[in-house]
Amino acid sequence: MENVIIIGTGCAGYTAAIYTARASLNPLMLSGTQPGGQLTTTTEVENFPGHPEGIMGPDLMLKMQAQAERFGARIAWASVDAVERCDDGNFRIKAGAETYATTTLIVATGAAPRHLGLPNEQALIGHGLTSCATCDGAFYRNVPVCVIGGGDSACEEAGFLTRFASQVYLIHRRDTLRASKIMAGRTLANPKIVPVWNSTVSAYLTDDQGEMRAVKLKNLVDGGEREVAVSCVFVAIGHVPNSSFLGGLVDKDVNGYILQQPGRTATKTPGLFAAGDVADHFYRQAITAAGQGCAAALEAERYLSEHA
View 1 (tube, rainbow, N blue to C red):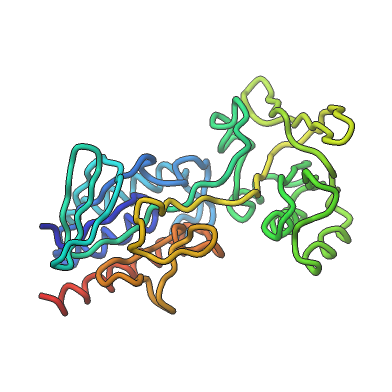
View 2 (view 1 turned 90 degrees about the vertical axis):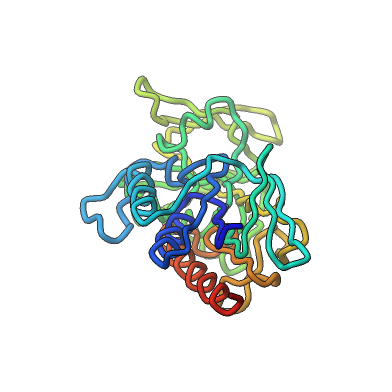
């Protein structure tokens, strides 16, 4: 029986591991299918405190892993299939052929960005394809970029990118934006944003170094295709929180994000805490995920002391 198991090894998970390990709770981490989380797919991270010269995403996650392991956190390279709550209030976790048991559980499994499913998509992530303007927008100064999507998130990304890019193409498969009226009006009034209606991206085109150089657009009305030169594509068609394996142990919103108690990381199930992007659809930043990981660790520690 473990004191605490942390599912996920991104910023939230590793921070929770650092705090629980330093509290002598001997945490066990279950890595998931993407050890290190979303930051392992990025290149340079410039907005994480303590790294004034920036740091590569994978390097940051390796440092977090080393810090967690320094204090005694253990990592099992396993992907969770299901979680059950036992009659005694503890949790049973099934991961392939293995079964784990724990008194408290911190879920830090993140959310995966939706992509288009084009052939070379995965290879381009971090090389001109991203889902976070806040993270990567500053790398694309004075060059054209595009945003795929038509909702509030896409409009927010496009507006943010106008601070850096020379031009922002907003590619939407319909002829009107799905965003709120105020957001849509602000977006269409921005002279640096060029809407591309009734269109989808049918291919990503790369240069000799494998970096994004253009997108091929298909018009859904007349079927015509054309190329638009861009240095980066920002995909803003939503995220999928990795929460399905929890069943009814947590409440979720309509998009699958775990609902936390107000101002807490606790969920409706005592002893089960959620941290990071699996519960946060608003900020989705490495530093806010780390903050929630800290909070979840402190709550788990308090829960254990109260139920000893």
